[in-house]
Amino acid sequence: MGDKEQRLAELTEQRDRTVAEIARLQAEARAEIEPASAGDEDLVDAAADIYERSKVLSFIQRLEEKVEQLDRAIQMVEEDRYGVCEICGDDIPPERLEIVPETTLCVRCAQQQEARAGIRRGGPPPRPRPTRRDDATRED
Image (cartoon, rainbow, N blue to C red; front, top):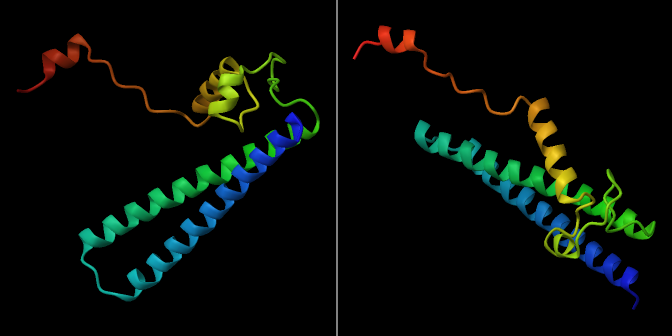
């Protein structure tokens, strides 16, 4: 088996495992939602359940994004472009590909893209900076 075929097999296997994990989590979430909606829970238990479900749904969303990235990486292997950054064209270090095989960006471009995405989403709100006036009018 050549390097290209081996990489395709590895990425496809990882994609299949990720899709199976998504299906498992979705089934688990459905199984938890049905009994919870039928019973009488106190507000604390209901809030805890909602929080746990939102964590699971968020994890599912991240796994779905990973599947999309794996699909893109598989496409790049098929086009003989795997290991080359889609943005700048530099080689992606083999160490990075070992750790994050679905990546199609070098570290620099990935960081820039994440920074831009944080700005578009608004990112965390800026912390208000205390001013001397705030300090002078504060009641202790």
